[in-house]
Image (cartoon, rainbow, N blue to C red; front, side, top):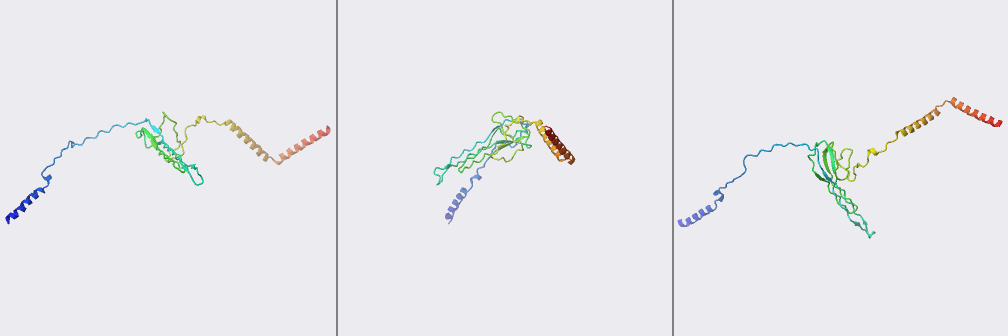
Length: 229
């Protein structure tokens, strides 16, 4: 009886040793090269005002047109109905009180690309405008390219996709100066004519009768002279 019981007890001991977790016998050590002390932040550097800035601006690329032909039962050869591509976006400089220098600008700015034209004479979408905020009183010196356009009124937030602001092609000094002397003489003549009309209407009946009598006397004198001849 005792021998038959000793065998399962021996196997039970080996089973318990196998179930012991290995991490309980092998300690783990961590090592780090980082120092526990935090590094001090660098002192704030002086920020200088940027009052000059070179900007390379470029308008967005226009969209390609669509080559399409609309055919029907009555029209065998068809008619072209492809739409034009959209217009590229613009680069707009907006004067505002929110900024005081050019530190927030990027040197290279390009307008958004326009959409493609589609069939049924549909025009492509217009490219997105890039609006850059600059301080009030900014002077622009053109180095290369075309003369930029100017908006005389407040900067609009939503521009019409197909309306361009007026360009500076007209010289205000070349406008013709009106002849003031000629205008004054014309006004004086008109005033004199009006005075004559008023004087005629305001004449008294005696004056009109005397003028009629004088006219009759003149006619009588002419008749007597004819008879004498």
